[in-house]
Image 1 (cartoon, rainbow, N blue to C red):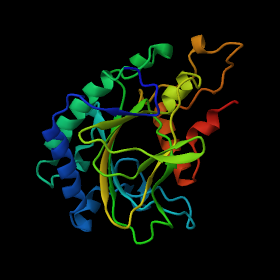
Image 2 (cartoon, rainbow, N blue to C red; image 1 turned 90 degrees about the vertical axis):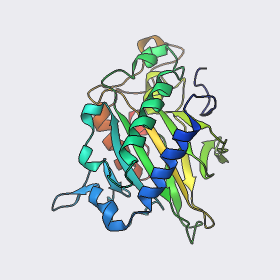
Image 3 (cartoon, helix red, strand yellow; image 1 turned 30 degrees about the vertical axis):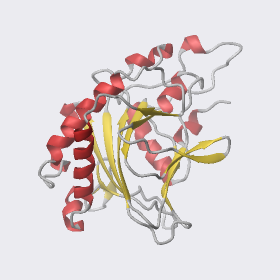
Length: 279
């Protein structure tokens, strides 16, 4: 059915429960590796330790006073396969590469069948040049969950996101209040991203969400982000702009640049989409 709600619990999605379990298992096993092993895939490169999107690490750090999220992350491009940086694909645990390859292929089938609205040609955006990022997240138990978040409030920058998680902690902002997103066994959580909000001229929304920290339990999750061609700029579809509903967004940067701006804005506690809003 069309994705008209902020978060959709996808059940009966056709991805085998065993594969979901394998993906969660290799994610846990990776984050349980010794730190020196994980740092072989660091997202800080070169003598200047410059931040790149792909790799293992934490937040992009822009200032010494920046409050960091209580979370370790590992970004990888999984599609198109020609864009994969295989040196960043871990060899431990031994099944990691195979499981991620199979899981990402099945998730892409789900994304393609997710019922994106036809307005503004949204359904055509996940073409052969579209890029899919996978982000593995690890939220360890936190001694002071009242002082820090697992992941600060943000919206996703792409077309849609597919999330695999078995533990509570995700919240969505609605009418100024935070609401828990329930964990449904075997379900995948799907939400729209900034691209959809811009192309639909605000008819559809990219929800603001966060992850809270917990003193009692850790949490791991796997998020797949479906973005458009990195060279593609995004703007409201002409058929969705009228006197009754004037244009609400400027044209964005190229998608590849927008993803980078999204992470920089996140580090500053801002939303990248706010920079292209007109009203």
